[in-house]
Amino acid sequence: MLTRARIVWAVVALVVVGAGFLGVRLWNGEPYPSSDPDLVAAELEDRARMLYADAGLSGQPRADRVQKDECSYRGLRGIAHLDDSGRPDVWQLRLEWSVPGLDTGAARAAQDRIRERLERQSWTAKGGIFGDMGFRLRDPASDQQVDVMWYRSTGNMLVRVSAPCGKVPRHYVDADWKRSGWNPV
Image 1 (tube, rainbow, N blue to C red):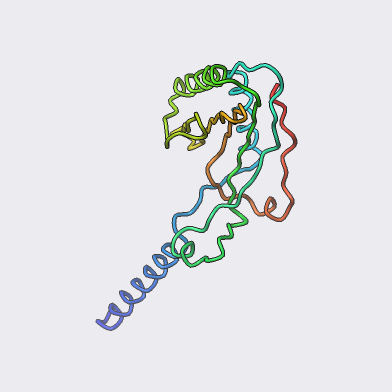
Image 2: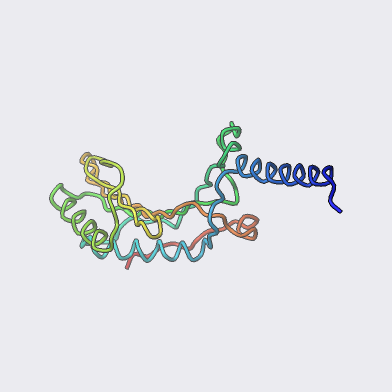
């Protein structure tokens, strides 16, 4: 038979366990979604290739491989993490390409074509002006972002495609992950 003391102990135990789960959640914050860097990199490469084609620019852009950045800790742990180092198991991937020597008209036309393409796909504006003339669009479905910037002093147009932070499997963290060079055509 359940005595009053056993009921009190059971309630106390449930409260302690609940407080423990809540404490861990407050310390670590909202968990990052899982991510496969190879699949995300392939998506970024495809999107960058599509945007380069849509821009309608001649010649080869300057491009690099997919880059990774460590993402910050969340929750109270993020506040307590004073050295600004990121989590080695949570990455944001990005890919950039650029075309130098564009005049204002060519850059604006290329940007308009990119913006029209993404807005047809339900991407939305986020933020303000980037560079001397530019914008940021975000895909509400995937949370990917595209930054399009043009700099008057150099005529350089830069397009950056990035994915949101995601927790990667352990074998990626332990290895020196690099994505092969990107070819826009």
